[in-house]
Image (spheres, rainbow, N blue to C red):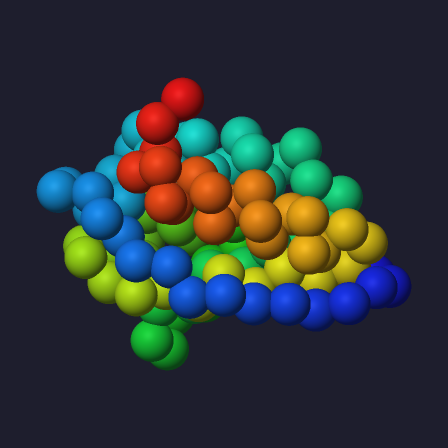
Length: 90
């Protein structure tokens, strides 16, 4: 996939961490993006378009690295960071 690669650090501010509901919101957002999005929690790396990988991270209050690469990576990263900053509010 062409284009740039960008990343930002976000904090999981949800009391119960990344459980089913926030993971499903993240997957829904990521699946609407044309670029590749990965979430890193220490040594774990998850595809943001895969709910099972995200839930397997068991992120509670952790700082995560969001990595977007490909076309429109910067815009995609901004949308995902906003989702985390809003604590996954709709």
